[in-house]
Image (cartoon, rainbow, N blue to C red; front, side, top):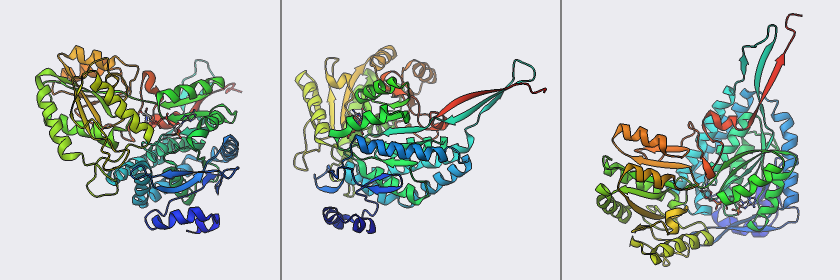
Length: 507
Ligand code: NAP
């Protein structure tokens, strides 16, 4: 409340009063160098709730100059943060973790308001995001170097890990809190500082996380959040990728934008960590436990209404179990997919995040139907609820000439493809430039090993539909990205190896 009064901006006050009891972590300014600030040109943009298009609040619409100021702050902070002990960094990360845990419900309410995801899922995202704060608080103290036996007498070969420096963190709207903690906790553990640019659709979770980091005692300048509208994203992105202050670009988002940023990073030969789009196969072989496969199919497809990079995208079902699988899927969709405003009890499927996303999903389904696919359920907007609600959809008779066969759908659309052999499943699975997650259901142990070795993906889940955890390295191959997040590898991404030779030990 004091923040609002200090800001002295009446429009912000008016909007916030209605939601203030629920959303006390709601911030309406950006966070740079430990201060809550406006854009240098005083511009703002509205953050809206996709369930009803209501304005939640306005935040600064920052430009390249503001991004540069934030980089300067991160650069200054790096000089002291890099020299803190791992134990000190671990202790601050743990405090941040504890505050995020205590404020889980408030954080979840913000995520639901700006992204539309059901509150239960938003709570799940906060728990998942917090797990990275806890994990990297522990990992900070285990980023060890090496002492390697020297090939020469009287010399010592040392390898140490040093923080890469200032990291630009650019994140998407689909997991607006967890995509930030997964990167920021790791880079802070390594001794780096950062400037975060969240999506236009979801800057509020990032600002709430920054507020709690501030309360946890994260020193000023270690974390900075620059909010910007989509129209300024490329200008801000250019500074965040090309400025000499930046040592590493850590991006999660589409392969299309990832390639643009990779190109800019290449000019300065900068480190990149790219978590890009997926196109996950979900393979069900005849020996699979069908009920288990179906339960996991619901999670793998409908979590966040299909708007997840590891969402199952192509259901490759063996002909022997195809009919039973499709029937079971339809039953579950009918029973479990309940659309509506994410704050309502019992709702499991919220709106799509914005008009662009809604248009893309519906045009992909229309394309499939125009080419001969059949929607056994769904296939249209639920316009009576709102303008971004798309019905949970199941398509059969899907063929290779359709967009849903080849591209990431990123929506609540199941596309079922009948396969006749293990070889065909592998061929279709691997016939894409994406390589993030893959799912395989079989009770045949040899087949599980054989197929998982041949799946060209960064991650393979066998008999499961949820695989991400802070303990394991998350990431893709091919055009799904470079680098890993989570696990000890997640923090190592933000370090450089330094080799030091110490000679003349006999003198
Ligand atoms: P996106 O359009 O690539 O946007 C991601 C972020 O980049 C947003 O903050 C966006 O800002 C920003 N951005 C867009 N153009 C930019 C530019 N020229 N310079 C700098 N920043 C720019 O992706 P999205 O649609 O938000 O997210 C969906 C995609 O993310 C899917 O493909 C999904 O698979 C992928 N994803 C991958 C992972 C993973 O771990 N591999 C996780 C989650 C999502 P605005 O939003 O304001 O435009």
